[in-house]
Amino acid sequence: MAEFFYFLCAIVAIAGAIGVVALRNPFYAVLSLVCHLFALAGLFLLLRAEFVAFAQIVVYAGAVMVLYVFTVGYVGGDDESVRPWHGPAQKGVALVFAGMLFVELCLAILGSGLKALDGEGAPYEAGFGSPGQIGELFLTTFLFAFEAASILLLIAAVGAVVLARRRGAGRVEADRMTFTEFMRPIGTGTTAEAVGTRDAGINLPAPAAEPEREQLESGRGERA
Amino acid sequence: MSIEWYLVVSAMIFCIGAGGVITRRSPLVTLLCLELMLNAGNLALIAFSRMWGNAEGQVFAIIVMVVAACEVCVGLGVIVAMYRRRLPIDVDDMRELHG
Image (cartoon, rainbow over all chains, first blue to last red):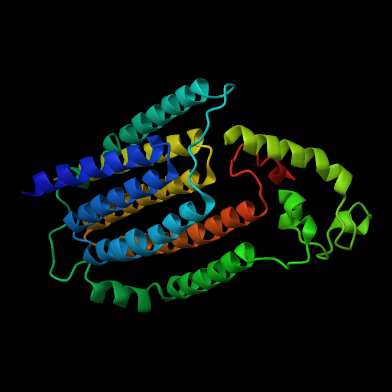
């Protein structure tokens, strides 16, 4: 019975992973990743990691994937256009690279000579992988990692809000901002401001930015 | 099933994710492929945790999930900001990041 569930979950997980890479529409790629995550949670259950499996479904397949779906809906999931100069060649190189990486990893796993790899694992004890055991480990041995993770989550949440917030309405130049200028807002004391190549006010160097904007416009037109 | 089988599946998912990061050009799909690679790492961690009968590997897997959630949060924030600035949503056109 375990073999049946193993092969079911493994095949669905690998098919989902291939779907993420191969599907051209980002929305379908996200849905394929959801299938992959559910199958992976099944594999975690087979490995007796109950808590991680359910955290995977609730946190990953639930919350994180909803974030993805909303972003794809907002940004618009247009299909990628394939450019002539690195279409097929890049795909071939990537396939060869992935294949070689897989062979190398398999050699490393199977040739490692670890005897326990052949077995089913350590004998199962009641309570292994239960929320109680994980919680006890988090609050005793891994207390520092627990606190660091909470601070990391807080920083990421604040950072995402700062990055994605709507800037002031008076900034007409915002649509001709380049990515570098966006990452370094005006008045942050960069070297470019000190030597006077960027104005301290809101007027950005328009002539320099103009050709780039045209290039971007043409790039968008080409995609549409 | 022996632990080897799980590790081989983990290696395969990792390679698929790595190939996707190289080929795809949309940053959204690149983030999805990064998730695949992190999940493959999680599967290997949990398989080794089962092998030793020690739940500490599962704690590592949960920390990896936390880091992945942070990465998605910030990455999607950057993509939304790029969209608002009408920058191209394409990793090949983001050439200004190298300073």
